[in-house]
Length: 506
Image 1 (cartoon, rainbow, N blue to C red):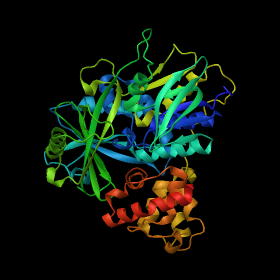
Image 2 (cartoon, helix red, strand yellow):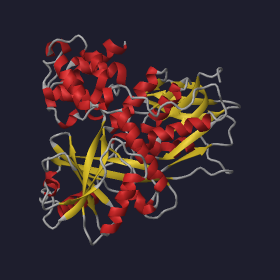
Image 3 (cartoon, rainbow, N blue to C red):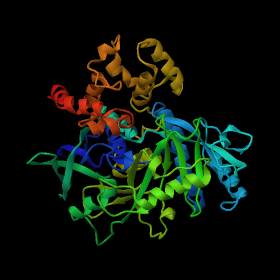
Image 4 (tube, one colour):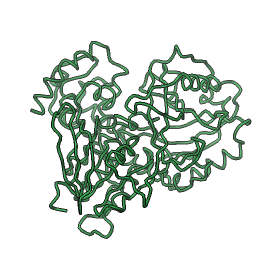
């Protein structure tokens, strides 16, 4: 292994790739992660933003997946209390669909399939006598309330990469893997950076293909399909979301059961908005630019209008986003029945180890990473044992996981910070906010102001530590400030970025 440039090369900078890089670097391996665009630019920034057990998966008897997801929900909430927070979900009962007893049984299992220490259990609710029923249509008289978690998906990816880098991993963004070539006992990985006329090559003792929707493309471009053990296929499924103005008071979310057996979530989003999603539509097209279809737009508006007390139309939609889920193709003809569990494919024909990752979900990324490393390091005692279960993510070392107490403490330390800005910094960076706030005595000491409370100190931090290179990286993946800022702020940021990058990166 020591003769190679790296012990492990990971292709793909989504949640699975970043999670694997973190796990591997924490075990003492030399790690290279290659991402063709920005971290989390694909599927991992386009989810419904939930860390959840997957209540509806119980219908398909996926008890193992739900149990594992519920365990991870607890683990991740402890690891990143700044990025992940509890959220109550209201499930109005519709007797024409799933019967009352089935939902009650499902919620009982959901409460007890795994140990639950941080979240409330489920309960029944009289919607006509409770404020939770106010936003719903009057025909709903009873329902259920249960708990899951909301997460900042793209920041979860970035902080896994940050932790990997702190542990020695090299993270190359905007660098495409063009081909993987098997040698006798290692791999040659050919790459090309964006804007570069020259290619580069690295050697690695092991490779993990965690390219998400591009997983088959990586295999096919490198001629790594196998006649002995056929490589699985993936089912590309688009999920779209719409964002509308804040639809109701309160921090609760709603679960809307649809006539086709699917569910649609209605979730408070970015303080001023409400998120409605998601859909499931087979996808063909540009994986970097999935767009909501007219069918999906109508589906989500209709889902909202059938259950909520007010109505929305396409004209109420402020923004949409879509992502492509790379589901393991298990032969199910109905998309909603396709498993969300992951499959790890080992390329057995090559002497050097390689694993390709198919499927998976945001909630179970850490388990996936751990299992990948256990397979790669089977019987290899040179590296440490699994370590990531309780280790906080960068910024997550908040005392007792008490986020509100953390914010209160920081408000005393930085009384000059506007309340909303302090809260945003705390949510995004946790304890790492000190990296750009330490020693600051006023807003002026944060450097140039580009508008809408975006200051130079934060941007320099994002360039130096979080691989932010373009305004889009900052406004839509490292944050969702793109929902809030004026065009003049975007223009000011785009104008200054080349100068800041040169100063920070050289």
